[in-house]
Amino acid sequence: MHNIDLDKYQIRTDMAIDLLEKDKKNFKPKVTTEQNVKISWIKLDENNTIGKKAGTYLTLEFDDVTDDDAKKKVATIFNKEFKKMLNIIGFKSNMKTVIIGLGNIKSTPDAIGPQAVNKMIVTKHLFDMNFNVDSSFSNVSAFYPGVTGQTGIETSDFINGVVKEIKPDLIIVIDALASTSISRVNKSIQVSDTGISPGSGIGNKRKEISKQTTGVPVISVGVPTVVDAVVIVSDTINYMIKNYAYNKNFQKTKIAKFINRPVNYLNKDVIVSNEDKKTLLGLIGTLNEEELKKLTYEVLTPIGYNLMVTPKEVDFVIEKLSDIISYGINHSLHNI
Image 1 (cartoon, helix red, strand yellow):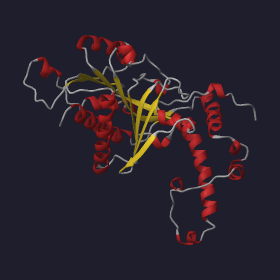
Image 2 (cartoon, helix red, strand yellow; image 1 turned 135 degrees about the horizontal axis):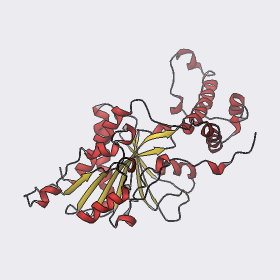
Image 3 (tube, rainbow, N blue to C red; image 1 turned 135 degrees about the vertical axis):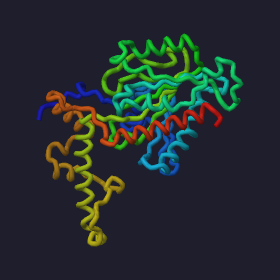
Image 4 (tube, one colour; image 1 turned 60 degrees about the vertical axis):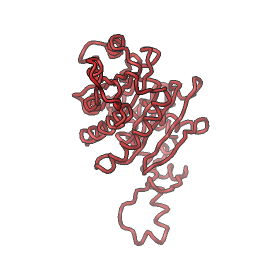
């Protein structure tokens, strides 16, 4: 086997938690679990080794939002944690906030931002007309600028023009992200105070939207909705190995005689040995996780098969996730 060119593979992820998992010795997020929702907070400094901007990152991970009870549970937790992020940046109820939904509303995996913006409670026009607005509501405006391919205008230029005109005290941007973990696609939300680079997750990086570029604090809210085919293939190989190791050991137990249904082996404490890897996959089994992804990249990219993939039920799930995000932001900005 030839030497793998490790430099040619660029990990497509916007999720800080994906990168933190590769350097567990140096980074230990503050992790809690509430009603089966995993909540991770971490603060990165300028000298962090994972290549992310310095700032605070919040990640919520959950199993399901497709039924009303699950959606309400995640929405309530997101609302509570989002308020903490607002406190970090010093939000006050008299601030003017503009909410921006990044992405293409006509492309479902990229429509989380526009869909969430359509559900925001906007009040700026009422304040501008000197209406007697209830003290429970703050000054909020919202819009989605589309994508450069639709408008011909750089998204950040569009946003900077709006910022100069309405002079907000806070910007909240909502966007679709990419992840290097199948388990997080449509099942996690990332919030940070570092801003965002539209399109970076799919290798189409645009100008950054951040406090440095706008002069205003920027909170980004994102959901990973796509994943590289490379990740799916390499993760599937790892799952095959873990499934093999689980079944090999499980068959030796007495209880195996009484269980005839599939078991979620990912939830089991399975030890995979190097011998297991070699037995099942030979030479490929000797590669570590990073080498396996890079090899898969070398195989799929020249033939044009390193696609960006999204789950088949994405339409339904994006609708639920946009409900969660809009609920959390509305209830955080307004005292309702």
